Image 1: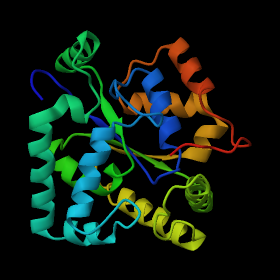
Image 2 (image 1 turned 45 degrees about the vertical axis):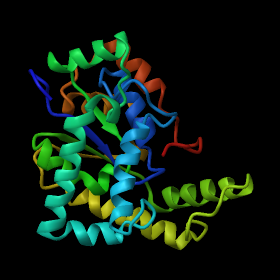
Image 3 (image 1 turned 180 degrees about the vertical axis):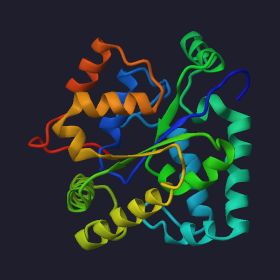
Image 4 (image 1 turned 180 degrees about the horizontal axis):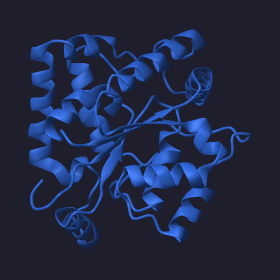
Length: 247
């Protein structure tokens, strides 16, 4: 976090709400979101960083209430911010998905020369108040999807996991619980709206008009949106009639 590194773009939103598709599109527009990422454009070490802290306070991504209660205290927010800051200072590259190879070093060097960067990981929605203590000028893209659609997708994914022998995740086979979970993430994201650097993105609107919405989003993220990149990014968005598999 040296040189002329710019504040990150935090892509937040509930699981299965279109954050993956949004992150891929922004990446095509020039947002640097890491190098060593999973199929959902997430850094596994960042996932683990978040989940380890959730477990520390008796929570999990699918049971965030104990964490949110802890974060509602001054002690909790300070402790969480300190935890994130210490880990980022110690292992920035690994946490945000950069390899220790020539390309990874080059990508990190770009950050020091002002490249726009950020990350996507749904738990960031919960951790955003702590991340904003570290990056107070971060830009927030809050992706919102129809609650029933997102909840149904969470439940369907859970049932598919169980069908291939994975152990069940508590309560995720219950559609009502999944809807409550999506609403919890939605509320957490909306609490960030007071920031001047907050942008809410309704995913269904993006599906209806990808070029216009992505151009607006690119401008919000301060990306230099080239016509060809915009066309490629827009083409990456599945229309609403095709069931989304974004997380």
